[in-house]
Image (cartoon, rainbow, N blue to C red; front, side, top):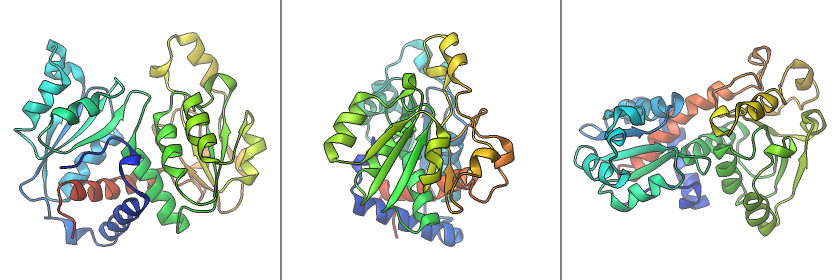
Length: 305
């Protein structure tokens, strides 16, 4: 039995196999429509989610399986004080695989140590969000034809953004990747990302404050929202939330083949006027998240064709 806690749980070769399977599912979804007949996915979400939870549920339903679970901690026995370990032991009796989101870093890892079924980390605090990273990688892989030899700009909340941390960790294993880290000083990437992942692996990166200065050189622009739930006070959030807004004027500075990704939800960091730009692929990215989660479910259940 295998779990997914981090993108690093998968080798580069395993990631490629998973993305190739996702591509096959995307090309011919009917061929996979009943492969999970009789299987059940539990979605144990201790904090709110729209895309991730519904994407997992859509993935399992499209594979012919069924879904059960809860959408927030207040609607589970966590509200009564039940531990994550006890919850997953019970859920293991009801389902064949579990996707868990939790506000505490490491909670899905604790659950995996007590579980009798595969556990997928669907986001733990500000730490990891591996299936969003799989979605990001698959989007780049399918639209760029590969992941090597790219300059990738990450913009916005790089301090608390778990999607950014997971993506950087995964991308450093590819060839000729350069990062441009675009954020105010208060929201720069944590030192462990800068020192232990980027510098330790001799990955070239620059840190800049102005999006306008960085955008002309990028193959990928990964926008993120400033997350209210990660701030300790409202004043800091309000000061930071409008720092970067991508609009048509800034897009005019970008390459014709640059892609804009965003893990969503969007607040105001991408103007709606950008949505019609063919380089804006964030809604297609969300769609591709279903295919890669289908591939992951099949892989962890040992049902790959």
